Length: 57
Image (cartoon, rainbow, N blue to C red; front, side, top):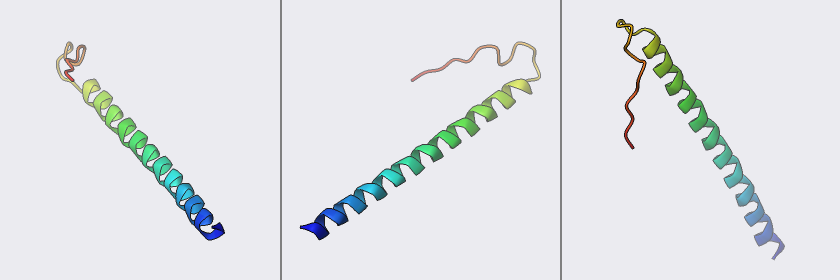
């Protein structure tokens, strides 16, 4: 029973680390995409371009 518990505990710890790593990666990618959007809107050639963004879900 002790071996089964330690294996389950190790797997749980690994799963937590993987989930945290994936969340960090997702946040990094989201931040990069947001910065790219800001940069794109700053380089708009027309003065009113980028003032409004239409978003659909």
